[in-house]
Length: 346
Image (cartoon, rainbow, N blue to C red; front, side, top):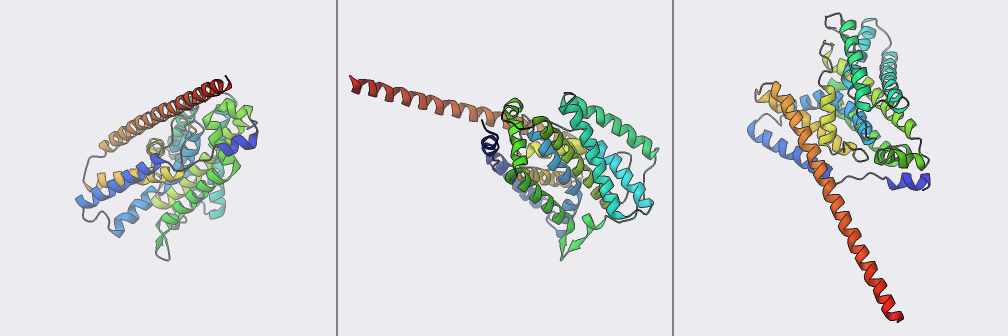
């Protein structure tokens, strides 16, 4: 099979799974708005957008990684290390453009290490990223020395707390990044190669797709997005605490899986991921508004991951059964036609 035909075959589309996530998000908003009168207030909506911006950016990278049938558990610790570097550079009074470039480059470096371990040393994704996660988490404790970074200059605060013609900049940032990610995955050959690798590593390699390079690129892109998310994190909070990024990997995986990205690879879209991100953010906001203990947040996230994966498996089994029935009908039709031709020949 030629490379061009393989790349053209894997053209991602928005399916029923993504639409189902959008329906769940709408249902969640309706329920919360009926329970709490101020849930849909402008102030609360802006707060939801602001608090979800760094998760939204990281979830793009997690989507790309999971499409190639991978996973990255180091994103939270990587964000923590980069956020500390950003805090140090802000206190040193360095140029904001230089700080942004260093942050993104640092994130890409973490992704490059993960990609090399996974693609070239053939270490399983979950083992490799658990290893880098542990190393980076130790670096967070060492770099902070048991103390928070507080009172950081609000250089990047505009990215999450500003407004442009009345529109929150957090919404603008999310819209720009998701539009770019959608274009990359659906309109660019490299994006379609990512889907091809996720659908079958060996098949993609036989078709001439550089599978190992595509896998490494996916982790580097994920790391770069984590680096930019660290800028947003520092701009949003103006500080870096010891627990920075502790739940980020779990939340990003949950948002991606809830959004319809298959844990087995080869299927997913940033449209569904964005719906998953907002579903998570609305749920967390509702937990705070209703005074529910925060420990139940993790329980709810874990439950949603399990339910989403089970739904995906059921849908996949249903699709396989439907395809088998279609093949059976086609085979029976071909057999009947052959019998008629033999009868006419006699």
